[in-house]
Amino acid sequence: MRFTALAAGLPLLLTGAGLAAQQPTAATPFSVYVSSEAGDIVTRIEVGPGGWHAVREIPVGLMVTDLDGPHNVAVSPDGRFWYVSLAHGTPFGSVWKYATGSDSLLGRVQVGMFPTTIGLSPDGTWAFVPNSDFHGDRGRQNTVSVLYTQDLTQLVEIPTCDLPHGSRFNHRGTAVYIACMMSDELVQIDPSVLGIVKRIPLGSGTPAAHAEHGGAAGPPPLPPGAPRRLGAASSTMPGQNPDCLTTYVSVSPDDATVYLACNHSNELQVRDAASLELLRRLPTGDGAYNVEPSPDGRWVLVTNKKGHSVSVFETANWREAARIPTSKRVPHGIAFSPDGRYAFVTVESVGSDPGAVDAIDLATLTRVASMDIRRQPTGIAVWRGR
Image 1 (cartoon, rainbow, N blue to C red):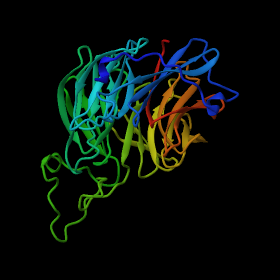
Image 2 (cartoon, rainbow, N blue to C red; image 1 turned 135 degrees about the horizontal axis):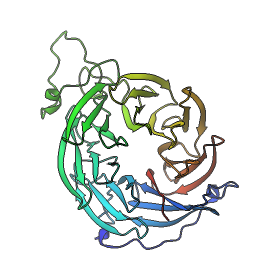
Image 3 (spheres, one colour; image 1 turned 180 degrees about the vertical axis):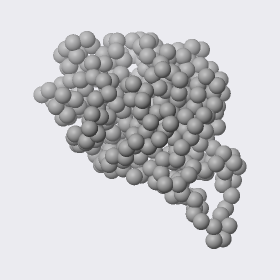
């Protein structure tokens, strides 16, 4: 079984795209971890004074013949561990824990169906992992797994919404925000009581109620002549239609605002973190997917999954300062260098063409380098150590 083996240090070569004249550099070296969903690997890239290079592929998954699908990767705030969600388990997915540096496996835990993002608490003790159940019937109430990371056990699954996808703690550790794709809503969880304290629709309608989510057969059918319900994004449910269809949520460095990427309406929503009230709706490129603020809060970046680009918003005036074309067609995740100089963006594979990690210089708002990464790179996270 593959999970028993430590990752050997496998030297990797940059392609021509990675040998750009201006590579990302750092006086203090750091690493970037990238999960490849179609290859059951996590690639580790080192960035230092001489540029960047991929140094290792870490195999993940139980069996070579069975694709487990690593979807997202996260590094603990203290830098000691990294975690990866394996989404394609049958019937359930799992979360695996590794030691940074050695990249050795420390444990794994079963969660729900198709886990996606890993929302870590500021002290690294807890992880809130949405079980998106991408291939299940829509109109159901999916869960968020709460993991105690010290011994990697699942404490509880919180029934949340239809296809929860994005998960993010605020920096004080007092709130967890969940972006719900198919019920088109934002949910706030209080981690101290492990319960939902607030939910709000993100579009013109209202999210499906708990009673509608809970039935095994989904929401009851509409009676003849009844008005159509708005606010849910499943095309398979009668009377439902997409509006925002949020995929990711993130929190400003000062915890004052939350940011949501609206994949259907092609926009960035800015909301008050306490009330969840809508503050701004800003147009992006097509298919807004991931959203992340820079460490200093000056920029908010959005990957445009259908628009082959990254939108960069300046928070001082909320203008779109740049729309940066990506090296390949389908941008996905975003992570920042520890000094905030660079943004790193994963770009998915299309057919036989490998995916990539693009490096964006935030001083010039330009893509300065790109490194090919094979087998569908999606999740990305930065480790400050080497």
